[in-house]
Image (cartoon, rainbow, N blue to C red; front, side, top):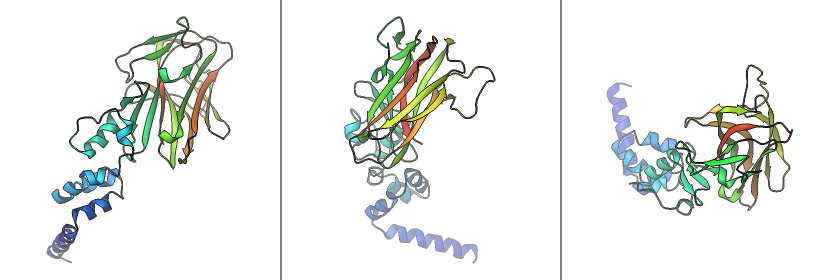
Length: 269
């Protein structure tokens, strides 16, 4: 086949697509993925107008998105709203949680702020301090000053999460220059869904020196400058009003301090 014949065939296929009603083509594209829709928008101006339309992107947004965010950001299209929710989490529930979307899938992501967590001795100023820091998405973060009973609990209703989705939970935090008591100190992390047993693992908030054990989870640095530590994973079937409980604890009597807690993030893996 020569180049002219090939070009004619491609033009003919493009004309065939143009013959489809825009609503029909939008319906087809909406059955793909956000990534596919973005790729198709680069094919031609015609495909861009359809693949970027609200008729396509409303299918990628959660069905209840209008109830999840306080007020839709000032955006020109649902595609831009989708991309904004991926890159810029919005605060909900009086700043006690943030909501965003997983860019590749459109699945729901949440972060529970430190104020939304139950922190043992968290309201005692000699043990924990509540501060505002410029690089946090939340109004307040919790700084550990000194405790020998380290325990943080979080909870979220599973109906808030996307159904039929594998999730992971992460502690989001920073270490201060004066951190102590966590160096290569094992911490227990547990995740429990309603009606199931604990899924428990050992993690480390602070790797000190070269004594790192490859079988355990250690913190990694995020793009936003915070650290995150994987606490566990679970599968959310959906269709039920259960709850997810997350717990981090260490009760060995050793004093600890120098950790700033931003929250616990729950996002698709």
